[in-house]
Length: 176
Length: 176
DNA sequence: CTCGTTTTGTTTGACAACCTAAGTAGCGCT
DNA sequence: AGCGCTACTTAGGTTGTCAAACAAAACGAG
Image (cartoon, rainbow over all chains, first blue to last red; front, side):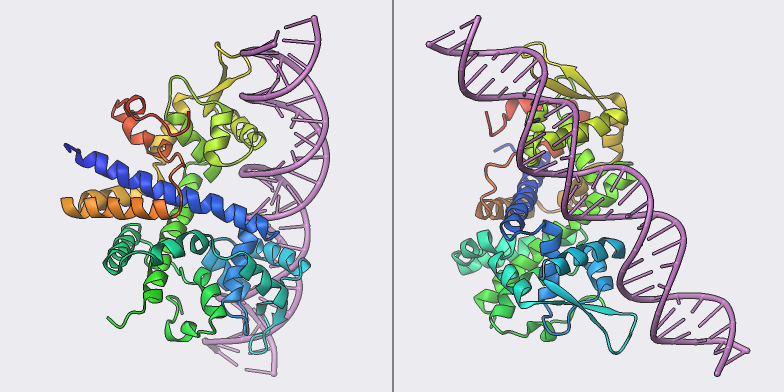
């Protein structure tokens, strides 16, 4: 009703803001419940994506958007907690593979992704066409934010790992 | 189709993740460009919403989801940077109003909201019905995340302040 | 094969963010 | 006045983060 176009922009921004804050706050709660900090949990989630081969600190730093020094510190703490181990690479002896332990995997499963726990159930309860529309809208928003080159898969891996699904192979990552 | 319902859930999660990471990383870049840290910029944005009366640390801590002690430290640094000042309240002498300075206002305007700078232009270029659909979808997602009680307005204020609009009065906040 | 360059990861030093716990001061009610 | 509650600050400690300097290995050119 007589809604100016600017109001609509505001509405969308408000909704988006709510989504961001909600997940952010929820992430903190979840990590805390798992006895970890949010960044640590995020490392763990990424590392959990490849339980066998592990992930290099370089990859972690790129995916998380922090420097390698920061990753070193984070991994140090996770090692101290027994969540991951450092395994030297055989092919390139400069590289280190951060590999998750069974303890770490258990922690990740205990603290599922912030989005999933709240969101998945509600989403799957929707009608088929509603789901399709939501996906389309979200992808459009992502595109508007120029988020295309961001690798967003890792955090979803928990579910697939548990299901024994090897989608990682069929859906290669954006960067080489 | 041949798209299993679970795939659609994954798709929506991936898109959502992208949105989250994109804004998060972008926020860091923006704050850095303004010579501030992301939390400091956030404080500044909230305080900028009420340039006259200011905002109490209590309100800031609730809206940001951190303790008051943290807010004290943040405000300390902003005061040191000349971005805000502490003005004791006349009505309740326990309270402090954190009021933005002209310097602070300039900084906020120079570093617009992470979402706005990337997103607003693209959004406003959309067709009318597309905008409506996006708003509806986003609000639905927010609802699914139980983000309803989160006060998401402050960060939008920059634009409205500049426009001389007093929407704050007509659109009271969620909490009393 | 050897030398310079690049890549990868760690260390160090310095801040900022954040929390908990323990103050201090003012409000409000009985 | 006195008691409890609220608003804010202070103190002390852990974590996250970066830049800069470092060490080790890969890699290419000669």
